[in-house]
Image (tube, helix red, strand yellow):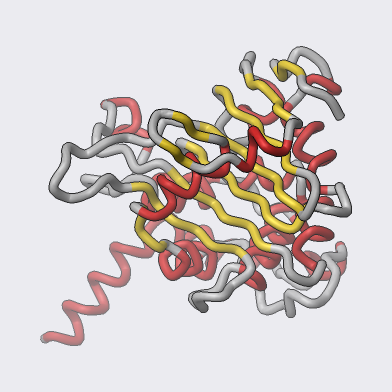
Length: 266
C-alpha cells in the first residue's frame, strides 16, 4: 500500500477498496472514523472485513458522526418527524426506508453485538459538539485512521462513511502511509491524523446508548443470536404477516402509540 489519491473513479481507486485493505492488515488494532454522516448501506460494503476485525482480540472501532444544527428544507421534507434531531432522526428514518434484506440485518446484529452501552464496548460511537460556551460547529470533516504497533494509515478527504461516499460519488481523498505523520498528536499549529481525531473525540457526546436504541427499534433487529452466522434460513423464518405488521409500525407506530396512551388516560 502506498500514498495515493482516492477518487472512486474505478474499483481499485474507490474508498471501499482501500478500507477493506486497511481492515485486513494483521497489525491494525484501532480504527477511528470521523464522518459528517453515516448510513447502514455503507457499512454493508465492508461487512466481512469489519466482522473479522472486530472478532480479533484487543481491537476497537471509534465512530465520530457530525452533528449539524442547520437542517435544510429538503432534509426536512425527507424526514417523517417534525423538527428532526440530527443525526438521530435522519439515521432512524434512513434505516426504516431500506428494504428488508439479509445483508442489512447482518450489519445490525454485528453492531448490536459490539456497540453496547458499556464504556469498554468494542465499538464506540460519539456525536460531535463543540464546547457549549462556543459557537456551534458542524463537523463536516472526513477522516479514517488505522493504527497498529508498527503500521499507521490515514485517509482524509471528502467521502462520508456512506454507500455513496465509499464507492459511487466522485470524491477526492488522500491516503497517507507514513506512520509518524498519521500518529502525530497536536503540538501548536501542527496536527497529525490521530491527534486531530482525538481532539474532536474528546469534545464529543457519547452516543452508544442512542445508537443501540435506534438499531434495536429497527425492522432489521430479529431475535437471532449475534454469535450465529447470517444465513438465508434466518430470513425465511420471517412470515409475510411479520413483515406487514412491521410495515404498519414503521408507518403509523407513533400514531398508534399516542392513541393507546390517550385510551389508557381515559
